Image 1 (cartoon, rainbow, N blue to C red):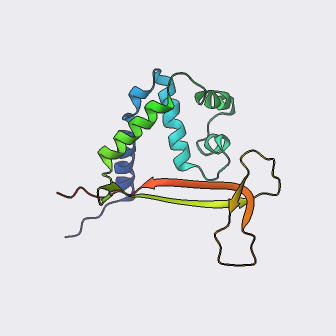
Image 2: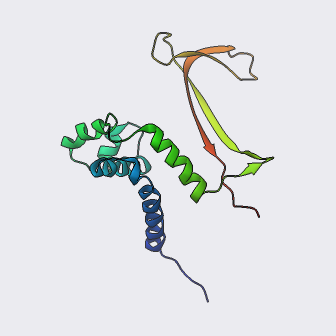
Image 3: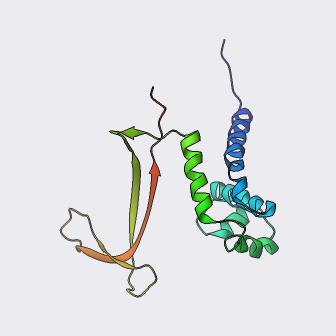
Length: 158
């Protein structure tokens, strides 16, 4: 006998899991509305169709345009602190997604991309070393470095 799971059942399970994770962060906010904006922003970041900042979130969640200033104010609000969010994030990752250890150390994965820029006096433009085996490329460029780092998750081994 085969058991079929519908798309709606999978979506419901995923949304319940996302809700569980996001509710872990409730105590990081001193105001209920600020927490609701946090949830809205996180969902917007997960669902956005382009990389155009807050306007992407506004557009993809169909938020009314008069809420843009409120959304911007969230990032300057005193109702939360980055440090409390960071600590809670680490606790949540350890609780829901066990870290993968190799030789007693957490395995991290990272990637980056260098974007060349013509101007040297733009904010964030730095002299970057080119890791290329092609001798026709310059050893250094001026540009931005975009990078990310993540944790490698595993299952607890006993």
